[in-house]
Image (cartoon, rainbow, N blue to C red):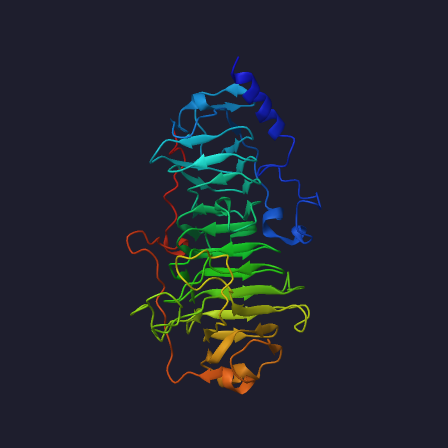
Length: 422
Protein backbone atom coordinates (compact mmCIF):
# COMPACT_ATOMS: atom_id res chain seq x y z
CA UNK A 1 0.00 0.00 0.00
CA UNK A 2 3.00 2.30 0.37
CA UNK A 3 3.00 2.68 -3.40
CA UNK A 4 -0.38 4.44 -3.50
CA UNK A 5 0.73 7.86 -2.12
CA UNK A 6 3.61 7.90 -4.56
CA UNK A 7 1.29 7.09 -7.44
CA UNK A 8 -1.01 9.92 -6.34
CA UNK A 9 1.96 12.30 -6.27
CA UNK A 10 2.96 11.11 -9.72
CA UNK A 11 -0.54 11.75 -11.04
CA UNK A 12 -0.51 15.20 -9.43
CA UNK A 13 2.68 15.98 -11.34
CA UNK A 14 0.80 15.54 -14.61
CA UNK A 15 -1.46 18.47 -13.71
CA UNK A 16 1.45 20.77 -14.52
CA UNK A 17 3.19 21.25 -17.86
CA UNK A 18 6.21 19.01 -18.31
CA UNK A 19 9.15 18.65 -20.66
CA UNK A 20 7.15 16.26 -22.83
CA UNK A 21 3.97 18.39 -22.66
CA UNK A 22 5.24 21.97 -22.25
CA UNK A 23 2.02 23.85 -23.24
CA UNK A 24 3.68 26.63 -25.24
CA UNK A 25 0.34 28.45 -25.53
CA UNK A 26 0.48 29.38 -21.83
CA UNK A 27 1.75 32.98 -21.94
CA UNK A 28 2.51 32.95 -18.21
CA UNK A 29 5.05 30.16 -18.67
CA UNK A 30 6.87 31.01 -21.89
CA UNK A 31 8.62 34.03 -23.48
CA UNK A 32 6.55 36.22 -25.76
CA UNK A 33 8.45 35.09 -28.83
CA UNK A 34 8.15 31.37 -28.05
CA UNK A 35 6.44 30.66 -31.38
CA UNK A 36 9.56 31.92 -33.17
CA UNK A 37 11.84 29.50 -31.35
CA UNK A 38 13.21 26.35 -32.91
CA UNK A 39 12.28 24.20 -29.92
CA UNK A 40 8.58 25.17 -30.09
CA UNK A 41 8.47 24.13 -33.76
CA UNK A 42 10.03 20.71 -33.15
CA UNK A 43 7.65 17.78 -33.72
CA UNK A 44 8.20 14.75 -31.51
CA UNK A 45 6.82 11.24 -32.04
CA UNK A 46 4.70 9.73 -29.27
CA UNK A 47 6.83 8.06 -26.62
CA UNK A 48 6.44 6.07 -23.45
CA UNK A 49 6.42 8.14 -20.25
CA UNK A 50 8.35 6.59 -17.36
CA UNK A 51 7.58 7.88 -13.86
CA UNK A 52 10.00 7.34 -10.99
CA UNK A 53 8.14 5.65 -8.13
CA UNK A 54 10.75 5.59 -5.37
CA UNK A 55 11.38 7.87 -2.42
CA UNK A 56 14.79 7.13 -0.95
CA UNK A 57 16.45 8.68 2.06
CA UNK A 58 19.64 10.61 1.40
CA UNK A 59 22.57 8.24 1.22
CA UNK A 60 20.60 5.24 -0.01
CA UNK A 61 21.42 4.38 -3.60
CA UNK A 62 18.69 3.30 -5.99
CA UNK A 63 19.40 1.75 -9.39
CA UNK A 64 17.69 3.73 -12.21
CA UNK A 65 18.13 0.78 -14.54
CA UNK A 66 16.03 -1.47 -12.30
CA UNK A 67 12.56 -1.57 -13.93
CA UNK A 68 10.98 -1.99 -10.48
CA UNK A 69 11.76 1.67 -9.77
CA UNK A 70 9.62 2.93 -12.68
CA UNK A 71 6.03 2.82 -13.84
CA UNK A 72 4.58 3.42 -17.31
CA UNK A 73 1.01 4.73 -17.34
CA UNK A 74 0.79 3.81 -13.67
CA UNK A 75 1.66 0.19 -14.35
CA UNK A 76 4.81 -1.88 -13.69
CA UNK A 77 7.32 -2.14 -16.53
CA UNK A 78 9.69 -4.91 -17.57
CA UNK A 79 12.36 -2.53 -18.90
CA UNK A 80 13.95 0.72 -17.72
CA UNK A 81 13.60 3.87 -19.86
CA UNK A 82 15.66 4.13 -23.03
CA UNK A 83 16.83 6.91 -25.30
CA UNK A 84 13.44 7.17 -27.02
CA UNK A 85 11.50 7.41 -23.75
CA UNK A 86 10.50 10.36 -21.57
CA UNK A 87 10.99 10.42 -17.80
CA UNK A 88 9.54 12.30 -14.84
CA UNK A 89 10.94 12.48 -11.34
CA UNK A 90 7.66 13.64 -9.77
CA UNK A 91 7.15 16.00 -6.86
CA UNK A 92 7.36 14.12 -3.59
CA UNK A 93 10.36 11.96 -4.47
CA UNK A 94 13.88 12.33 -3.15
CA UNK A 95 16.46 10.07 -4.64
CA UNK A 96 20.13 9.25 -4.69
CA UNK A 97 20.80 7.21 -7.77
CA UNK A 98 23.36 4.46 -8.05
CA UNK A 99 26.95 5.57 -8.56
CA UNK A 100 28.67 5.41 -11.95
CA UNK A 101 25.49 4.80 -13.92
CA UNK A 102 24.60 6.56 -17.16
CA UNK A 103 21.01 6.98 -18.28
CA UNK A 104 20.24 8.21 -21.81
CA UNK A 105 16.62 9.27 -22.25
CA UNK A 106 14.58 11.76 -24.27
CA UNK A 107 12.59 14.42 -22.33
CA UNK A 108 13.31 14.87 -18.59
CA UNK A 109 11.14 16.58 -15.98
CA UNK A 110 12.35 17.08 -12.40
CA UNK A 111 9.51 18.01 -10.06
CA UNK A 112 9.36 20.71 -7.40
CA UNK A 113 11.70 20.03 -4.50
CA UNK A 114 13.06 16.83 -6.07
CA UNK A 115 16.77 16.07 -5.69
CA UNK A 116 18.32 13.80 -8.30
CA UNK A 117 21.66 13.28 -6.60
CA UNK A 118 24.86 12.30 -8.41
CA UNK A 119 26.75 10.46 -9.60
CA UNK A 120 24.12 9.33 -12.07
CA UNK A 121 24.93 10.88 -15.42
CA UNK A 122 21.65 11.76 -17.12
CA UNK A 123 22.08 12.30 -20.86
CA UNK A 124 18.92 13.91 -22.23
CA UNK A 125 18.35 13.91 -25.98
CA UNK A 126 15.17 16.00 -25.68
CA UNK A 127 13.75 18.81 -23.57
CA UNK A 128 14.69 19.28 -19.92
CA UNK A 129 12.54 21.07 -17.35
CA UNK A 130 13.74 21.41 -13.76
CA UNK A 131 11.01 22.89 -11.60
CA UNK A 132 11.53 25.41 -8.78
CA UNK A 133 13.47 23.89 -5.84
CA UNK A 134 14.16 20.79 -7.91
CA UNK A 135 17.76 19.93 -8.71
CA UNK A 136 20.07 17.59 -10.56
CA UNK A 137 23.73 17.16 -9.80
CA UNK A 138 25.15 15.60 -12.96
CA UNK A 139 23.44 16.45 -16.23
CA UNK A 140 26.23 17.81 -18.35
CA UNK A 141 26.08 16.17 -21.79
CA UNK A 142 23.79 17.67 -24.45
CA UNK A 143 23.77 16.01 -27.86
CA UNK A 144 21.12 14.84 -30.31
CA UNK A 145 19.89 16.34 -33.61
CA UNK A 146 16.59 17.88 -32.46
CA UNK A 147 15.91 21.46 -31.37
CA UNK A 148 15.30 21.40 -27.63
CA UNK A 149 15.02 23.56 -24.53
CA UNK A 150 16.94 23.32 -21.26
CA UNK A 151 14.86 25.02 -18.58
CA UNK A 152 15.80 25.50 -14.93
CA UNK A 153 13.25 27.45 -12.90
CA UNK A 154 15.82 28.05 -10.12
CA UNK A 155 16.85 31.50 -11.31
CA UNK A 156 19.10 32.65 -8.46
CA UNK A 157 22.62 31.51 -9.36
CA UNK A 158 23.74 31.93 -5.75
CA UNK A 159 21.73 28.78 -4.94
CA UNK A 160 23.06 25.31 -5.65
CA UNK A 161 19.88 24.33 -7.55
CA UNK A 162 20.98 26.57 -10.42
CA UNK A 163 23.92 24.24 -11.13
CA UNK A 164 23.22 21.09 -13.11
CA UNK A 165 26.74 19.59 -13.42
CA UNK A 166 30.41 20.16 -12.71
CA UNK A 167 31.20 20.28 -16.44
CA UNK A 168 28.69 21.01 -19.19
CA UNK A 169 29.28 20.06 -22.83
CA UNK A 170 27.09 21.31 -25.66
CA UNK A 171 27.81 19.16 -28.70
CA UNK A 172 24.80 19.00 -31.00
CA UNK A 173 25.01 18.55 -34.78
CA UNK A 174 25.32 21.64 -36.97
CA UNK A 175 21.84 23.03 -37.60
CA UNK A 176 20.35 21.89 -34.29
CA UNK A 177 19.94 23.99 -31.18
CA UNK A 178 19.36 24.03 -27.44
CA UNK A 179 17.75 27.08 -25.84
CA UNK A 180 18.40 28.02 -22.22
CA UNK A 181 15.45 29.17 -20.11
CA UNK A 182 15.75 30.33 -16.51
CA UNK A 183 19.28 29.90 -15.14
CA UNK A 184 21.77 27.16 -16.04
CA UNK A 185 25.08 27.05 -14.16
CA UNK A 186 28.09 24.75 -14.08
CA UNK A 187 30.45 24.54 -11.15
CA UNK A 188 33.44 24.38 -13.46
CA UNK A 189 33.84 24.15 -17.23
CA UNK A 190 31.28 24.81 -19.94
CA UNK A 191 32.22 24.07 -23.56
CA UNK A 192 30.46 24.83 -26.85
CA UNK A 193 31.72 22.23 -29.32
CA UNK A 194 29.10 22.10 -32.05
CA UNK A 195 25.58 23.28 -32.79
CA UNK A 196 23.74 26.32 -31.46
CA UNK A 197 23.22 27.31 -27.84
CA UNK A 198 20.67 30.10 -27.38
CA UNK A 199 20.44 32.00 -24.10
CA UNK A 200 16.72 32.73 -24.24
CA UNK A 201 14.91 35.93 -23.24
CA UNK A 202 15.74 36.91 -19.63
CA UNK A 203 17.70 33.68 -19.16
CA UNK A 204 21.18 33.36 -17.65
CA UNK A 205 24.05 31.07 -18.60
CA UNK A 206 26.66 30.90 -15.83
CA UNK A 207 29.92 28.95 -16.26
CA UNK A 208 32.22 28.25 -13.33
CA UNK A 209 34.91 30.72 -12.39
CA UNK A 210 38.04 28.60 -12.84
CA UNK A 211 38.13 27.81 -16.55
CA UNK A 212 38.07 29.16 -20.09
CA UNK A 213 34.87 28.67 -22.07
CA UNK A 214 35.65 27.63 -25.68
CA UNK A 215 33.32 28.25 -28.63
CA UNK A 216 34.60 25.87 -31.32
CA UNK A 217 34.42 26.64 -35.08
CA UNK A 218 31.11 24.81 -35.66
CA UNK A 219 29.42 26.22 -32.56
CA UNK A 220 27.22 29.27 -32.05
CA UNK A 221 26.49 31.01 -28.75
CA UNK A 222 23.49 33.34 -29.14
CA UNK A 223 22.14 35.85 -26.61
CA UNK A 224 18.53 37.04 -26.69
CA UNK A 225 16.77 40.08 -25.22
CA UNK A 226 17.19 40.47 -21.47
CA UNK A 227 19.60 37.55 -21.19
CA UNK A 228 22.95 37.49 -19.40
CA UNK A 229 26.14 35.48 -19.68
CA UNK A 230 28.83 35.66 -17.01
CA UNK A 231 30.84 33.48 -14.66
CA UNK A 232 29.55 32.63 -11.20
CA UNK A 233 32.44 34.61 -9.75
CA UNK A 234 35.21 36.79 -11.11
CA UNK A 235 38.09 34.88 -12.70
CA UNK A 236 41.16 37.12 -12.38
CA UNK A 237 43.38 34.99 -14.65
CA UNK A 238 43.31 33.37 -18.12
CA UNK A 239 40.48 34.11 -20.60
CA UNK A 240 36.79 33.91 -19.82
CA UNK A 241 35.63 33.11 -23.37
CA UNK A 242 37.53 32.15 -26.53
CA UNK A 243 35.48 32.30 -29.73
CA UNK A 244 36.56 30.50 -32.90
CA UNK A 245 32.93 29.96 -33.90
CA UNK A 246 30.17 32.54 -33.61
CA UNK A 247 29.06 34.79 -30.76
CA UNK A 248 25.78 36.48 -31.65
CA UNK A 249 23.44 38.86 -29.84
CA UNK A 250 20.06 38.66 -31.52
CA UNK A 251 19.36 37.15 -34.94
CA UNK A 252 17.52 38.44 -38.04
CA UNK A 253 14.51 36.31 -37.01
CA UNK A 254 14.71 37.37 -33.36
CA UNK A 255 16.51 40.74 -33.13
CA UNK A 256 17.25 42.32 -29.75
CA UNK A 257 14.37 44.40 -28.44
CA UNK A 258 15.96 44.97 -25.00
CA UNK A 259 19.50 45.03 -23.63
CA UNK A 260 21.35 41.79 -22.92
CA UNK A 261 24.54 41.61 -20.87
CA UNK A 262 27.90 39.94 -21.39
CA UNK A 263 29.66 40.18 -18.02
CA UNK A 264 33.45 39.73 -18.22
CA UNK A 265 36.02 39.20 -15.49
CA UNK A 266 38.55 41.69 -14.24
CA UNK A 267 42.09 40.36 -14.84
CA UNK A 268 45.13 40.88 -12.61
CA UNK A 269 47.41 41.12 -15.69
CA UNK A 270 50.03 39.40 -13.52
CA UNK A 271 50.32 42.31 -11.09
CA UNK A 272 50.57 41.52 -7.40
CA UNK A 273 48.49 43.48 -4.92
CA UNK A 274 45.66 44.10 -7.38
CA UNK A 275 43.25 42.06 -5.25
CA UNK A 276 43.26 43.30 -1.62
CA UNK A 277 44.16 40.60 0.86
CA UNK A 278 45.10 38.06 -1.82
CA UNK A 279 48.67 37.14 -2.71
CA UNK A 280 48.53 36.77 -6.47
CA UNK A 281 52.14 35.99 -7.30
CA UNK A 282 52.24 34.71 -10.89
CA UNK A 283 48.47 34.39 -11.04
CA UNK A 284 47.47 35.49 -14.52
CA UNK A 285 49.38 37.33 -17.21
CA UNK A 286 49.26 40.42 -19.38
CA UNK A 287 47.63 38.50 -22.24
CA UNK A 288 44.57 37.45 -20.25
CA UNK A 289 41.27 38.86 -21.52
CA UNK A 290 37.58 38.68 -20.76
CA UNK A 291 36.89 37.48 -24.29
CA UNK A 292 39.03 36.72 -27.32
CA UNK A 293 37.37 36.42 -30.71
CA UNK A 294 39.95 34.59 -32.81
CA UNK A 295 40.81 35.46 -36.40
CA UNK A 296 38.18 33.14 -37.91
CA UNK A 297 35.56 33.88 -35.30
CA UNK A 298 32.37 35.95 -35.58
CA UNK A 299 31.08 38.60 -33.16
CA UNK A 300 27.82 40.11 -34.39
CA UNK A 301 24.82 42.01 -33.04
CA UNK A 302 21.37 42.22 -34.61
CA UNK A 303 19.17 44.83 -32.93
CA UNK A 304 15.71 46.18 -33.66
CA UNK A 305 16.90 49.55 -32.29
CA UNK A 306 20.69 49.86 -31.74
CA UNK A 307 20.21 52.85 -29.42
CA UNK A 308 17.86 51.07 -27.04
CA UNK A 309 18.40 47.33 -27.49
CA UNK A 310 22.10 46.59 -27.07
CA UNK A 311 24.61 43.98 -26.11
CA UNK A 312 26.18 45.51 -23.00
CA UNK A 313 29.78 44.35 -22.64
CA UNK A 314 30.88 45.14 -19.11
CA UNK A 315 32.57 43.93 -15.92
CA UNK A 316 30.54 41.25 -14.18
CA UNK A 317 30.69 43.18 -10.89
CA UNK A 318 31.35 40.01 -8.90
CA UNK A 319 33.92 39.43 -6.20
CA UNK A 320 37.44 39.46 -7.60
CA UNK A 321 38.83 37.22 -4.86
CA UNK A 322 38.70 33.63 -6.06
CA UNK A 323 37.23 32.04 -2.94
CA UNK A 324 34.97 34.79 -1.63
CA UNK A 325 31.23 34.81 -1.97
CA UNK A 326 30.74 35.52 -5.70
CA UNK A 327 27.54 37.39 -4.97
CA UNK A 328 29.05 40.02 -2.72
CA UNK A 329 29.63 43.02 -4.99
CA UNK A 330 33.29 43.98 -5.35
CA UNK A 331 33.66 47.46 -3.82
CA UNK A 332 36.68 48.24 -5.98
CA UNK A 333 36.35 49.78 -9.41
CA UNK A 334 37.43 47.20 -11.98
CA UNK A 335 37.99 47.28 -15.74
CA UNK A 336 37.86 44.60 -18.43
CA UNK A 337 39.12 44.11 -21.97
CA UNK A 338 38.07 42.25 -25.09
CA UNK A 339 39.81 41.16 -28.32
CA UNK A 340 37.73 41.47 -31.51
CA UNK A 341 39.10 39.85 -34.65
CA UNK A 342 37.51 37.97 -37.52
CA UNK A 343 34.07 39.14 -38.68
CA UNK A 344 32.86 41.88 -36.32
CA UNK A 345 29.54 43.77 -36.48
CA UNK A 346 28.86 46.18 -33.59
CA UNK A 347 25.59 47.83 -34.61
CA UNK A 348 24.01 47.83 -31.16
CA UNK A 349 26.76 47.50 -28.53
CA UNK A 350 27.50 49.38 -25.33
CA UNK A 351 31.00 49.08 -23.82
CA UNK A 352 31.26 49.85 -20.10
CA UNK A 353 33.92 49.31 -17.41
CA UNK A 354 36.53 49.04 -20.19
CA UNK A 355 40.19 49.71 -19.34
CA UNK A 356 42.34 52.05 -21.40
CA UNK A 357 43.24 50.26 -24.62
CA UNK A 358 40.83 47.50 -23.60
CA UNK A 359 39.00 47.14 -26.92
CA UNK A 360 41.61 45.35 -29.04
CA UNK A 361 40.73 45.28 -32.74
CA UNK A 362 42.53 43.89 -35.77
CA UNK A 363 40.68 46.07 -38.29
CA UNK A 364 40.70 49.85 -37.60
CA UNK A 365 37.38 50.30 -39.43
CA UNK A 366 35.62 48.34 -36.67
CA UNK A 367 35.91 51.36 -34.35
CA UNK A 368 34.11 53.49 -36.97
CA UNK A 369 31.02 51.31 -37.21
CA UNK A 370 27.71 52.90 -36.33
CA UNK A 371 25.74 51.73 -33.32
CA UNK A 372 28.66 51.77 -30.83
CA UNK A 373 27.79 53.36 -27.48
CA UNK A 374 29.96 53.88 -24.39
CA UNK A 375 28.91 53.59 -20.76
CA UNK A 376 29.73 55.89 -17.88
CA UNK A 377 32.31 53.73 -16.11
CA UNK A 378 35.15 53.35 -18.61
CA UNK A 379 38.72 54.03 -17.53
CA UNK A 380 39.60 56.50 -20.28
CA UNK A 381 38.17 58.81 -22.86
CA UNK A 382 36.60 57.23 -25.98
CA UNK A 383 39.77 57.61 -28.04
CA UNK A 384 41.79 55.91 -25.30
CA UNK A 385 39.71 52.76 -25.15
CA UNK A 386 40.52 51.28 -28.56
CA UNK A 387 43.83 49.68 -29.48
CA UNK A 388 44.70 48.31 -32.91
CA UNK A 389 46.58 45.01 -32.69
CA UNK A 390 50.02 44.87 -34.25
CA UNK A 391 49.83 41.09 -34.58
CA UNK A 392 46.92 38.63 -34.56
CA UNK A 393 46.05 36.88 -31.31
CA UNK A 394 45.03 33.24 -31.55
CA UNK A 395 43.88 32.15 -28.10
CA UNK A 396 43.72 28.46 -27.30
CA UNK A 397 40.39 26.65 -27.16
CA UNK A 398 40.84 25.09 -23.75
CA UNK A 399 38.97 22.30 -22.03
CA UNK A 400 39.96 19.40 -19.79
CA UNK A 401 42.58 17.61 -21.85
CA UNK A 402 41.60 14.22 -20.47
CA UNK A 403 37.97 14.58 -21.49
CA UNK A 404 37.83 17.01 -24.41
CA UNK A 405 34.97 15.92 -26.66
CA UNK A 406 35.16 15.53 -30.42
CA UNK A 407 32.79 18.05 -32.08
CA UNK A 408 29.68 16.47 -33.59
CA UNK A 409 30.71 17.88 -36.99
CA UNK A 410 33.81 15.69 -36.79
CA UNK A 411 31.96 12.52 -35.82
CA UNK A 412 31.73 13.07 -32.06
CA UNK A 413 28.73 12.95 -29.72
CA UNK A 414 27.77 9.46 -30.86
CA UNK A 415 28.41 7.66 -27.58
CA UNK A 416 24.71 7.68 -26.71
CA UNK A 417 23.67 4.41 -28.30
CA UNK A 418 20.09 3.15 -28.64
CA UNK A 419 19.31 0.50 -26.06
CA UNK A 420 22.36 1.18 -23.88
CA UNK A 421 20.16 1.47 -20.76
CA UNK A 422 18.88 -2.10 -21.15
